[in-house]
Image (cartoon, rainbow, N blue to C red; front, side):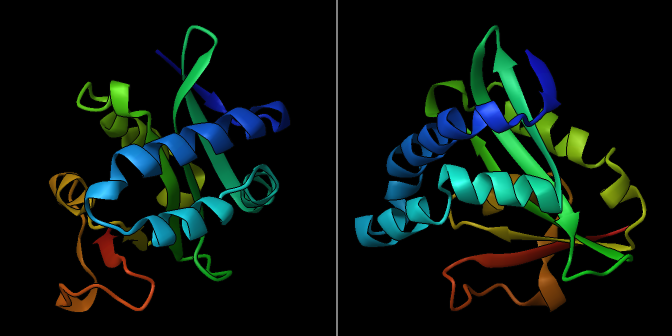
Length: 155
């Protein structure tokens, strides 16, 4: 497996990866209506814009993209950052790729300059992020209006 920075030509493949992952993995915790809306918010165009606002990485198995993750500043803050768009293809889950994505994001300059890092976690992924050292923001273990848990880590 190789991790590298996102390229513009990755956007269409990444859009498909995210849609497949949501429909397969997240369908156990979310309605198809919610998933379809979330897929729209991860279009190739949106991914390109997100990559411009921070750093997005992709994990490749040979030429195939099998995972991704991004980090950016949190609402323009120099002391807070946010992890976003973390997905691993269903057939590659459970093989340590998610851990590798978090590890590379935690070596990024946006992470290293931050005192606090936030991650909006799906219901599906909250256990994984807790294993990676993230905990409920302000101790609130409830799903918010976006149907995600807000997790954070302090450095």
